[in-house]
Image (cartoon, rainbow, N blue to C red; front, side, top):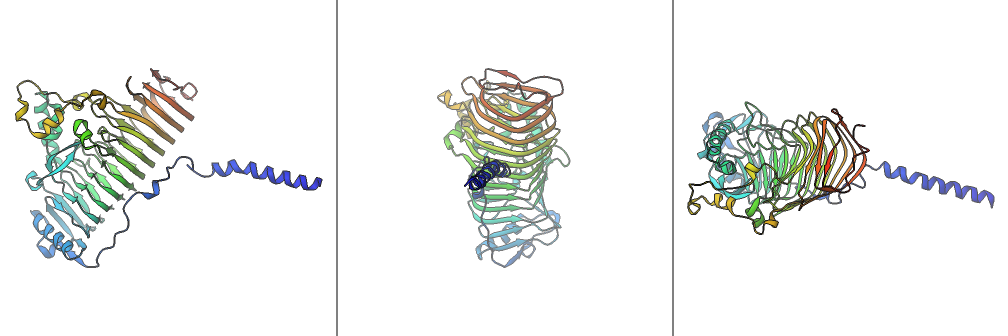
Length: 485
């Protein structure tokens, strides 16, 4: 009997002593949401027939506008049951192209699609830009109200955007002199490179995209979309304003992976409408996974907003490397946006030479965010998008955004200028932030205002100026054991 008790005691000891080890060796078991394997497009199967745009008169000299010929090939491919639409080696100058159901649009190595430098080659369509529904030029490549499409290849799509960058800067100088900074981005109509709208089951894979005139890839009002292995280079020959990398806009069940982005604004960005118009539409961005990517120059490795009106929630970001990116996690909105940003998970992030790692603001960029009509204008004669921008959010409380339930784990930041900059509002506290295994080396620590309930586990902030986080109007936010370790 004594021997039996010894054996039983030994077994119980081994059982209970091994249990914590098994949990520890299961990475992120308590962190990954249960929905992350449900995102992205499903496999597309296309007809084996191959269509060459050249057989429909497409010219590959890079000088002859060949939009109609390529579009004819796309239409013929779709009409006949689908297949692969591709190109013989060369450069193809084109305006807006519209991809149809069942088409595998392939840009092989040795082929460059060149965006026209004439805005007239991009017909205006009903769309949404920077949070407002309005007439705006179609993108270079458009997937509108379609399903079961793949855009891929090792070739290049070159937006040739510099002419549009220059146009914007010239117009902005003119508008700022008239106190019209708030509307210039909407009046300076510039083509996006790829637009996927109101579509389902679309793959965007492996392409090299450069020099966008405006946003590079916008996924709008769509679901079950995969962006995989795309390389974006927008800082060739200049630094284009608002040349975001990938914008996910009021869409759901989206997967972005294996991408490499160098741009001049937000690298990976989630949006959901702005101000009165965004609250009217009221469509969220939700169930989004971004993983295994690189963010180079750009305004934000991962940005939520500033268009938050329809709400942004259920987001998982993992294994992203940042090099020279201005911000790490950037959550931004304004007091006329409204909406809720919540249930955000971010883990396994490494960054070097970053501006501010965590930056959160509910009063972002006032000159751009708040619309005011100067003297000398008659509101009745204004363009429709001006009227939308000027429509007040009522009651005003509806415009106050909410940020909560933000979780960060396994973060390693080196060479930051500032570690943390969080600014909630007295009427809207930034709530429930979890930092686990977060280590930041920065020139200065930064500040936290109007926030509550920060849960810290193995967090260090090494501020080179020996500063500590300035914490104001906040509850349950204590970094005293974490700074300058």
